[in-house]
Image (cartoon, rainbow, N blue to C red; front, side, top):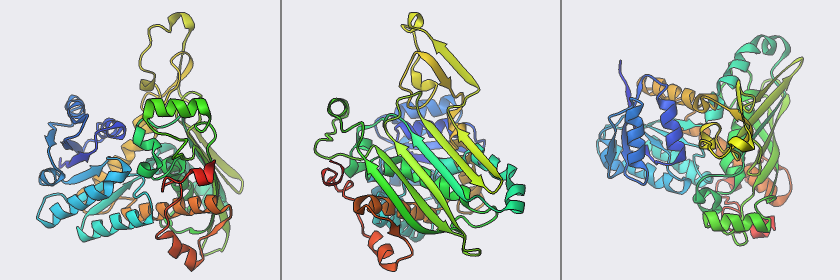
Length: 413
């Protein structure tokens, strides 16, 4: 069986999660990892899971001559430079012919459009990794409700949320490096899956036409003195000077180009969910039918009382971003599969080995970036952004949110 040889640029939290996902895809192997902190640990992990042998390379150019595809799991601020090196290697005759990029494709439209342009210049197959679209719960509800969509009409409202207590790494908290706050970090997930679920079955990904975006952002928990001090002490990021939003909510309105019907996708995201851990919640409503997904509803729960709490495993082995190690705990035995990471890797592998772009190419990631930027613009101006207006769309091409510029005090405080 032919396998897709993959190289990683990035060796942090998301890379480790993706290795767990790759171990569940038969036709993938982790051939290389760019030499960075944590690379040796990931290489050992890959070999334990029979994904190796995995070599650690000193440069992207060197790795590009040994792999079929490169996965960009490096910090947001480093992706464009990495992509430039991949394309240069490809033009020089390197073996690499495909690239995957974890969300977001870019911190703004300029970066995202450059990622698309570089991929085209390098004649690279692409996959924009937006895992929630690949969740089995999402694809299953679409299949199960297909008869209802056919007889009653498509969904008219979706609501999606992603919430946890905050990111792992310091750079994620820094809006100038990450690209913003929770809207940039997780809003892209919620906006993408909302659009995808609304789309009538059998239609192209971008069939529904974005009409407008309304959004509010706020700094609620992490702007309070005690939490701000904790963030400075533990992450080295000072929200008294360069804050980012820890809460975002909004609505994207779409139009069906054939019927003219307006449909809406609500999104809510926060870094202030101090319950069990990461929660993804989605639901949708159509005429006479509905669906609901809650990832905290698990087939397994455990209880640890105070008397037994001195001996506990790392709580994140039970649930990503878990904030407790005692009491009633939700346990998800296979988070990589639950959240869609396995299926996005499977889709990329099948597509690339067939010489095709994945279900979600870089051009789709560009459209999600546009919607996120429109949400930031709406929050700044405290008004609905009209995406049918040519001047607004032109403005979004060069727009950099105040929060991304490090000027969040002007908006959030």
